[in-house]
Length: 81
Length: 147
Image 1 (cartoon, each protein chain N blue to C red):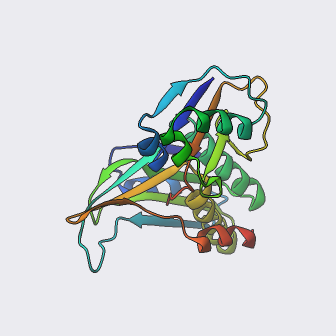
Image 2: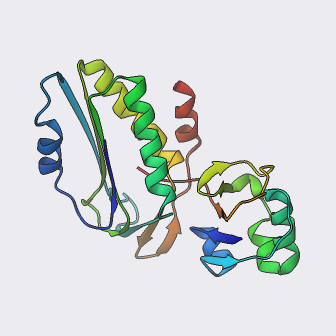
């Protein structure tokens, strides 16, 4: 599964995208797996209320299932316009 | 409907003329243009806009499609730039065409409210002192409850 990071999430993780081998059933389980990897992940995901998530390019919640999902993206609240 | 996400500048006059032309059943066209504004206390060198290619176009198309259906619009246009912009440059525009002005105004406000907090763009302000990500405002999120 491809995991993408944008804005300050990209800066904190240190890369824009990576391929992750995971058996996580939900976004939250994936977050826990990533947090367990390294400090920079634990720091970046320390307050998920400050984050938004998109699954296959659709905004969703952290309890969303990951079955059959190709792409998950994490980013701060959007500031368009 | 036209949705354009690009790093290139656009001409708001040309875009508005092209958009307004050729509709005989349209009595009202409303346009809104967003411009990079300087900061009062800490002059802005540039604004950098990051986006999520693919999702951005899909999100904007969904927002515009919803507006067209809800206000029975004849047409809708959304242009949004990304990359590095300097104060005074145009960031984005929306245009709506409807039979009557109230629908055109309301639909344009809806497009603006949604693309501010539901389209995947992130702004970064660069000043002489440094740079920082623009923080989303609670009032922008609250604005969606109106719809």
